Length: 151
Image (cartoon, rainbow, N blue to C red):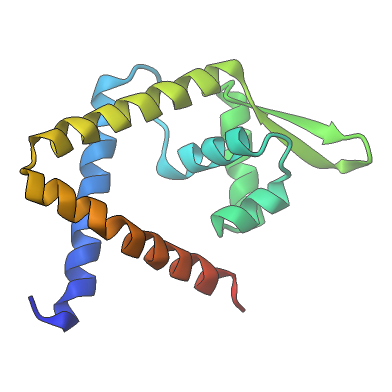
């Protein structure tokens, strides 16, 4: 493969894997379907209980009003709890509900199982190549994250 073709090929494969995983998970897991941004927000709030809307928007690289819309949708669905902060009644503190935690846990467990099944089917050389690529992929993700935070 030509060096110039690598970025496009890489993004194409990642996008395809992500899409296939999402479709399989939607088919197999119960409950109403959640959009990608909704799941991202739930995962963020689960990892950072009490996070505010503005901080969540910064973390997800979304506009504040977009996150507010997601918060309203997820609150109405019973997956997110919003409460006013005692020190600033205009700000909200976000927490996932037990139902959301259960859904996130089921989603994560099934996603890992789906990928594990496929990785185990690969030849040993392919598994070794994936393992060897992980540090470079992490550095790529770190570079994208840093670039996104630099004005």
